[in-house]
Every structure is written in C-alpha cells, then in structure tokens.
Amino acid sequence: MGERPISAGDSSEPTPRETHTLPTETIQIREMDMSRDTREASKTDQTPEAATSQTVPEKTDSIVHDTKLAAPALLGPVTDGASSGSDASPVETDLMAAYSRFAPNQRIIIIAVASTIGMLSPLSSNLYTPAIPAVARDLGVSTDAINLTITSYLVLQGISPTLWSSIGDSTGRRLLYLIALTIYLASCIGLALSYNYPAVVALRAIQAIGSASTTAIGASLIGDLIHVSRRGKYMGNYSALGGASTAFGPVIGGLFAQYTGWRGMFIFMSAFAAFLLLFTALLLPETKRGIVDDGSVHAPRYLRAPIKWLDAPKKSPTDAAAVARPAAAKFRIDIGAPVRLLVEPECLCIVLFTGVCYTVWQVTMVATATLYAERYGLNELSIGLTYISNGVGSVCGSVLTGKLLDREYKHQLKREQQAAAARPAEADDGSPPANEVQHIELARIKPVIIPTIGYLISVVALGWIIQSNVHIAASITMAFFVGGLNTIILAVFSTLIVDLFRSQSFSATASMNLSRCLLSAGGTAAIGPLIRAVGVGWAFTLCAIIALFSCSFVVLELWRGRHWRAKRTAAAAQREKEFQ
Picture 1 (cartoon, rainbow, N blue to C red):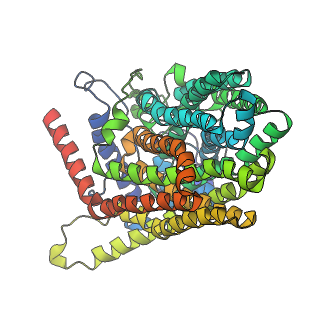
Picture 2 (cartoon, helix red, strand yellow; picture 1 turned 180 degrees about the horizontal axis):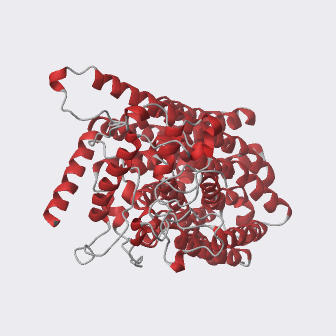
Picture 3 (cartoon, helix red, strand yellow; picture 1 turned 45 degrees about the vertical axis):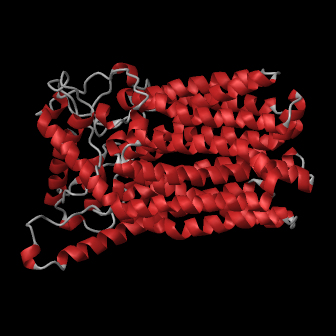
C-alpha cells in the first residue's frame, strides 16, 4: 500500500525514506491541532453528562482562521504524497501524515469508492431523463405527470439527508453507507417490477432516500482524510465522477429505454448497487475522526470492515495514547441539525446561491428532453446522446475546479504572508506566521466569479438557440458550457462549506443539498407551464435573471463572511468557557 512516514506510536524499524526527523514546526502544528480539536470536540459532541467520559477528539484540519499556527518551514504548497510521488518533500509528507495515518494509496482507494457510490444520486436522476416520453407512453400518463416523479425524487433527495445527517455525525460514515445502499437497492428492484404510475412515484421517492445521502457522506469522508490545503483537488475529482454520471447516465438510460424498455435501467442499477453494497460491507473502513481519530484508533466492532486491507495502521497497545478509546457511537436522530445551520448567515448565503444555480441547471436538463423530442424529432437514445456534452462539461469543470482552488489557496496564503511581513514592527503582536489562509472566503470564491458570469450567459443563449430552431449542434455545444460552469460553481461552494463547518460537515452538506433539491423540485414542476406561457427563450432568460439576483448572496458572503465566522468562533469559545 506504499510507505508512510514514521510517526509517534510506530513500533517498526524505519526505512531509509522514514529516517528524517519531524521538523519542529510540524510538531507544533500537531500539538496545536490536538489542543484546538479537543476544544472543538467538547463544543460539538459532548453533553454535560458525557463531559467526563474519555473520548478521542475529532482531529480535523480545522480552519480556525483567527488562530495563527507556527510553520515558517511549511509555507508554500502542501502536496499529498500520493499525488506528487517523489516530488513531495519530507516536510510536505509529514504534514499529510500528521493529519491522517491512512497511507496515500489507501486514501485514494477509499475516496474512489466514495466517489463511485456518490454517482448513484446524479446517475439515478439523469438515467431517467431521456426515458420520460417512453415512461409516459407505457404508463398512459402525460409527460407533466412523469415530471412529477422527478419532483418527488428531488423533494426526498433534499429532505432525506436531514434525516441521515445526525446519524452520520454520531455513528460515522460506514454504517450510513450500508443503510443507504440497502434502501437504494430495494427501491431499484421495486421500480424494475412496477407497472402503475403511483408505484413509480412512491418508489422513486424511496430511491431518493437511499441515494441522496451518499453525496454528503462522500464530502464528509474527504474532510476526514484530506488536509485543507489539498482538499480542493480531491473535491474537484469527487465532483468529476458526478459529472461523468451526468454525461453517460442519459446515454445509458436512452439505450435501455430504446432497446429493453425503461425498466431495464433499474435492473442495471440494482446490479450496480448490489456490487457497491458488497464492497462497502467487506472492505470500506470507518473514517470519521470523532470515532477513529486520524485512523489510528480502532472503531467499535460493529463499525469495522471484516477485511482490513484499507485500514490505517493502529496505535501500538503500549502507546499511552492508545488507552484513550472513543466513546461508543450513539444512534440518535436530530433532523433539525442541517436546518439549524441555516441560522448561520454564511451557511444561508451559500445554500441559497448554490440552490438557485442548481435549479437553473436542473430545469434546463428536464426541459430539453421534451424539447428535443418535440422540435427535433429525436428518439430516446438520441436524446440521451445529446446529454453527453453537458456531462463532459461537468467532468471538465470538476477537474478544473480542483486546480483553481488549490492554486488560489496558495496565492492567497502568499499574499497574507507578505502582508504580515510588511506590517510595522510595533504592529507585531508576537504571533508566529500563519500557515493557513485566514480569509478562506476570498480564497474559495474568487476563482468562481468569471465562471458564474459565463454560466448566466450560457443559460440565456441555450434558451434562445432552441427557441430559434437553430441546428441542434448549437444547443448541444451550449449545453457543454452550462454543465461545466454549473459544476464549477457547485464544487467551489461545496468545498467552502466543508471548510467553514468542519466538525459538522455532513450536516452542512445536507443543508446545501436540502436547498438545491427543494428549489429544483419546484423549478422542475414549473418549467413546463412557464415554457408554454412565454416560450423557451424567455423562460431560460427568466431563470438566468433569478440566478443573477442570487449572486448578491455571494457578495454578502465575501463582504461579511469573515466577520460572521469570527463572531461564531467567539460565541463557541464563550459557550465552552461557561460550560467549564
């Protein structure tokens, strides 16, 4: 599985690659990170009754931006050994090893599995889109009625993560994956055997309950394993597989609808889900830092994978730190956790903006399926093929996002370091230089400004191209930009919300999912009547105008986000002080 740097608690002899000594700065980071996350764990996970219990703190990379960490030797890009190979310096490798004891290859495999499972939600939605006319004919209902099956899917896709979030935050990632995949598999089998409209509506809703949480689990898992300085790349790659689902889902759906009937697609999804469920049950380890720390602590027995191939090396039984065991995970349901996060203004700004942008993309996807059949006379397979451009754009946007985020993070860190060095001597408070970006909002949002402008223009252009009956190649080309630019927007803000709410990453991602799915459910139900009332061009233009107004939330986050975050951190510190 590859070598890893030697760290505290290892009992094996070091290899030549492992003989370098941890820099003083890295040791300081580890000590300060443990202290910082102990406080965070006491704020978020403990109750007064449990305060005396012995637990392992959830050790995240924690962007506590008003805390300055000492690390002059660590300034500059931090590279995961898995991604840079022999180019990674010992200091960079030490920083990643200090954050997670999972080997680089193990991290890559675990994230790849999570990304594949995360494909279920977008794949289930997009697989179905080109089959809308065929499903309507087979069930003897209108296309507007079939659009309601998409609406039911989106509503439950938005609501269900709020039900799962508290379970995932208390019992970890592995158990929730197993529950979600089991529900999803059962719903796919039911859909493959359905022959009436009410059953399809109900089972699509159940399918959403199983698939929706997988996206949030995967984002939280990346936060468990990857340091903030490299998280942009991994979040981008994670989103890329979702983009691949957008690209090839409609093609697969069109093939099944054309040659086997629409039920064939659900037989295919049943087999796919069964494989993922088996792999997860046998191999996928628990990664939640509140349960396994950095991977070095054993999870409770019911959360352990039978096959230990992907497990991180555990602490030696003689290690004093190994005596501290995490408290047993408690199964609790707190459906209000994602909703309560919406009280935080920075969370509210993010979820509203991304919700509107996602809705605009969703309605263009749904509308074009019917429009291509009516205006261009395409069959189900041909409709599916037209979605390849949208999906390829999504993949390209995802890969580009990771590079943009990591590059801008380094540039913002360099600017802040230069500003700190230029301060007058009398303004120096004695704090060591920071090795993490303080203004994380600027570092994350700045790369998305131009893509947002391009996205709005592309949506308007797509509507008027279809309205004017321009050759279908033009609309397919424009769909590439709509899909790619929308993916950049969503990936950037998904990364930002995990950065801001690291100890509640599941609930934060669930709140984002809640907003975009509920808004897109309403948009999906409304787009058909709107197009019939004002035409395709004006309908898409109106959608872009609404998205333009939502950009005010981004401006507000840039302007006040740092202040809100500092206020939230101070309030949390005050609560901790009162608790003590």
